[in-house]
Image (cartoon, rainbow, N blue to C red; front, side):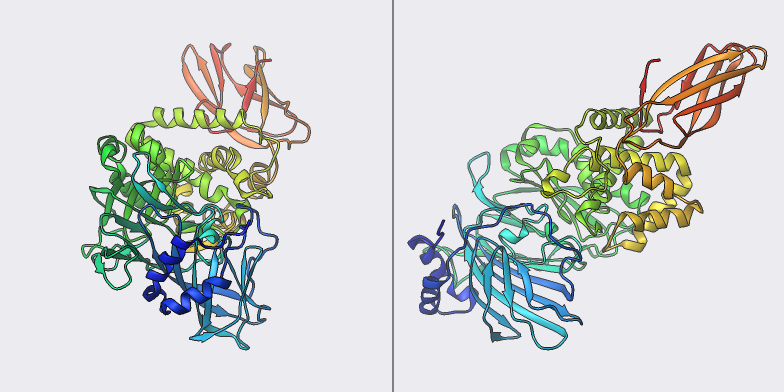
Amino acid sequence: MNKSPSLPVQRFLLLAGLLVGVSGSTLVAELAAAQEPPPIEAGLAPARLPYAPGLDVLHYDFEVALTEGGESFLGRAQVRLALAEPLPDAIVLDLTGLAVDAVRIDGRDVEFELSSGQLRIPRPARAGEFTVDIRYHGTPDDGLILRNTLHGQPAVFADNWPNRARFWLPTLDHPSDKATVRFTVHAPAAWQVVANGRLVQEPFVTRGNALGEGANRLTWIWATGVPISPYNMVIGATEFVVESVGTAACGRAPVAARADGCVDVTYWVFAPDVQNAARKFARAAEMVDFFSRTIGPFPFEKMANVQSATRFGGMENASAIFYSEQSVANNPDDGVVSHEIAHQWFGDAVTEGSWSHLWLSEGFATYFGALFFEEAEGVEDFRERMERSRQSYLESDVTGQAVVHTERSLFDLLNRNNYAKGGWVLHMLRGLLGDEVFFDGIREYYRRYLHKTALTEDFQAVMAEVSGQSLDGFFQQWLLEPGYPILRISHEWDETAGEIVLTVEQVQDTAWPIFRFQTEVEIELSTGTTRSPVEISGRRSVVRIEATENPRAVRFDPEGWVLKDVQRP
């Protein structure tokens, strides 16, 4: 389909001429040739890794012009990047479905090619740092959502996960390439604009390049001081009510925007939904404090919780979490809030270097999101959450796949392996190592990979180092192979020996591994209750435990540390 700009869009672009630094006549002439190509399919896994060898983006400076109720936008991207030996064949950025009007490198006009979702630019002849200036426009097919809110108000929201930033931003659209980012957004004066990082200055009136007849506009500038992945780079713009729930992480937020070193925790919501939002986000500052104490310093400048048009229940954009507008309007439960705030540490600050290792983001957010409630509501609440998570995994259609698994469509990675089983892997590791060692390892992993990327083997290496244990078998069976133990458990009392004979059979699919794990057995006698450690391995394990009488009850894994299913004998 030819998506050449309509006359209203041409007028929109003409009025924005000063924004992109070209005259109106030049811009109209360019529009005759600059048309929007058809978009590529969203969410396709990259064909190769490493993603962009020889190319590293250091900083993005984006400028975006928005109109109230418009279907199109105007953009400019200044991308500071480094080329390394061996030099790539070209500078290749991800961009799809939009029209590119001009490209410059260090101020010089260059030829370019936009096809198959890639903007190809001839590279300089030497290694070093360069700035690529890209001027573009169009109607985004995805990534930047321009539509009315559920209350009928015009709005614009980015929604980039997994690699949909390319539908509105020219980037290296892969989590392994982190960069700092600055957004300059020109928007209707009645709107508020939120984005990553800190507000550089108070919004100011934009004159001379207004995108409506005589209407003044406000310019908002947000910037990050630490690098983030493109899927985290977002803007949100509409008429918001902005409320604070307080400050958090005081003394534990090295890049906080506030002079006192504390983090502002706010929510940005639509006016009719303020009452429900107040309940939903009431504990957001407590959550930031909890994770700052438990994991490490808060990694970003602020913590904004934003009602938005995301297709997901919540999207963990760095320092500006976007939540489903329906959820904020109708559901006061704050479980998703804890999950998304936990992502600020894992997923955002420490990011999976490859999509197939998504559990390092979603499994961590699932588990740490539940851990907040262990402190806030008590251990029984936490156990109930873990049990629901266990059931959701056992009932899923992905038990026959390993957690670390490659998919053609990245959307298929949003499954119970990466969420529920990933969370349970952390829970089992905590049970194996004990709280002190486990949390020491988590804090060291966070410290070592803060604002970097990591793979499963990196996390394993840190936990092995801190614990002094070899964890090869643990990570192999729980993350790199499919399934879980399905157990048939029986016991009898050997009166002569004064022992309970416990038999544990693993009856899971033969394509799954035979699991090896440690747990406890609780034995209830007339004289009291005792617990004994046991290790299960092999298809059939027989364990003998001393007992002075026939037990009243035998409970296997009484505190639920192992992801398993138990069948009746």
